[in-house]
Image (cartoon, rainbow over the protein chains, first blue to last red):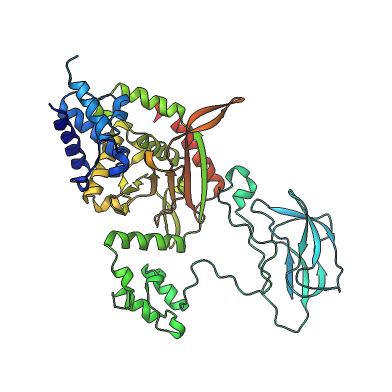
Length: 83
Length: 400
């Protein structure tokens, strides 16, 4: 999966949780919660959705890595890379 | 004949001791004259008189300690005027707050001025700026119509009973700004206007260290897959629900017959809608739901509220409400009660604070819990105990 694929997956899952965010332009460095007005429950649901979609457990301690699209993509990529 | 009474010299003042009279019976006094010295816990305070006249009678002798509001002297008016109303000596402050410092609201009742206005013109309570006839007010109250939304056709634009009747059937007399609001905004406007108009709110706040709860939550979440984890919000809701079992006067409804406690605790969750507005549907029997199940129900409710799919029973029967700011909020909220409930509990965001631990300062996660409560149904002393109980329960999360 390419970086762009992962980026699109994150955006898609956010739009499932908060439909009105679909199509909102957001840079890789913006805080997702601030830019898209996501609350704790939204982030909780995003972690659940990404874990299910990608088939691995995102530890609670790593949830902070999903703060921005850039850091989230980096994180997911690192998790998917063969160890 | 006027009355000169023991003034309230601060919201926490319950009583004062008359130290000295500076005027004798028969002496003429003018508004603003210092006529007595009163000893309070803030020290000796010189007290002024609020009207012109003659001291007719001294009712309290030096050395006597009397409650706020007790008449100290009778003052005869200079002119032969009909008896003036009692000077605007304020009602005694919140009794509970006065008795128990711990129960003092964070925003104490506005301390009455030491020198009330000279003219005994009745003070308009807040919300009374609207001109409306008593019949119109009664009807509006009965029909739950916000007078602010009614156009008046009486003298000087005063609202009369007919105007309220018209407003009820949705006539064009209803101001357009209201008609333009979307239904949710209108529902919030109606409920909150009614709340602020009818309910004598008092507010309390309590900040506490949540290290134990946060640590427990961290351990719990580290050992559970994403879908089974918990948010702090589930812990606070459960702690509040459990605490309410011991404080029934905060859980129930206030109706025409007064307060009726509810045997069940159906906690309303204030849930913000994206793009504005909020709803506060209930999770039924909140106090008896285990945390994992409570979290599932909260997620489900938030999702349904935001998609517009909640049930009328969930909306109609919360017995008390909780409003949590989550992690992007501020330190605390002073929440407004949803009528006919009698209390709403607020949880501010958890943030790091310098916090005394033993003799030193440490940096600790701290949360502020607040309550907005109906003084017709309960008192600040018990409200304070309720907040403390919630904090206690929250910091023993294994028991939630």
